[in-house]
Length: 445
Figure 1 (cartoon, rainbow, N blue to C red):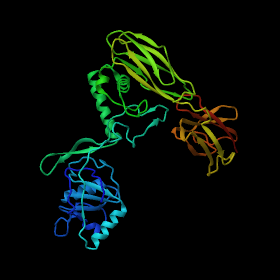
Figure 2 (figure 1 turned 30 degrees about the horizontal axis):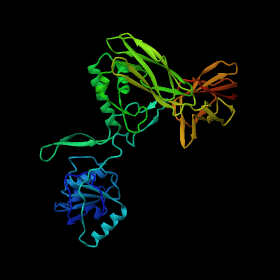
Figure 3 (figure 1 turned 90 degrees about the vertical axis):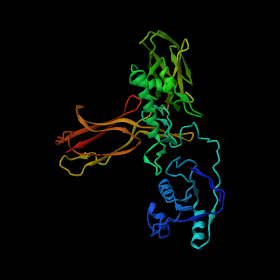
Figure 4 (figure 1 turned 180 degrees about the vertical axis):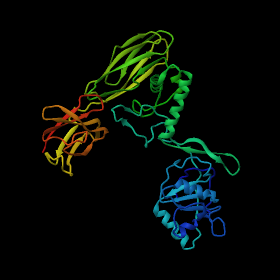
């Protein structure tokens, strides 16, 4: 039976490794704990055998329980376990393999018929990992909510070995592996803490700039998907604020402040990797001083990403400032506005329903462009154009249809006098550009 070992400390070649099932699987009971692998007299059902168990929603917990009951191997029924997905863990010191549902059903049928079922697990083989050095598939990428680069910095976050609480039965310390953004964020935060300790004068913006600007490139990574390099950040001689540049539809140019971190006067040459420009192309900055530069790109820039390279003359450590743009044509962020009734009563209990579509979704060349709304305001204005207050406000709204209840009352809750009124709807883009506007008129009687 072909299978791949996912985590192993020993190899099995003999087909004489018998297959056994835990007690609760045979009885059709619920979730598997350690007790499921022992009979009612306290004897292990799987000791020295390959435990055939359903993977369920927690395959790691099931494998750990089987190993604690003395299983020599664990066969997870109904799941193809990718190599290394269960980690390298002291609590699972036996091979763990996954088989599909059809193979699992065949094994169970053979066991239930009383057949002597054995398996052979091939020894662990080392091979190249095509995902090594790349951003994990489960990591979010692309432009951030405000149009900025995402991710700005990459840290180790797959199969990171760490200590675990407690000790093993032999008294040795436990260890485990963890994966996810949480461990990557902790690694980068630790690097930032060490850098702040070594260079207390950097400040928050300087820390961010030097960590991002001196990071190492990854294979097939984006302009920003680069791995933190603490040693390089420690020797950086200039910093840039902001550390990354967003050139959105409403801002095709952005000012970047370059600061000299060295105790000596430094001359810095500036160049651009990608379809953008930078001005000026060289600056000289006194110790502790700063200079302003302008990064700009046209709306037809392709690809809409790159980096500004800041090269320090005389061999000093240089940095890079990644930039990205979302140059979609401007359009309304407020559309499909509908009011269920144009006449309201301050005494009526049932309100009118106002529905509004905010933001935009656009598809081009197989990719989807998402344009959210940074802020949405609904302002009430009387028939003379005098503002009466804010009826509602939303922040950070993703594209979609939103509904609001509209009554014949002022923002303060008091009844509105009879007359005509206007709702002024404003949707502000995330890049700081001009808001989209829409007017809704109604009467109160």
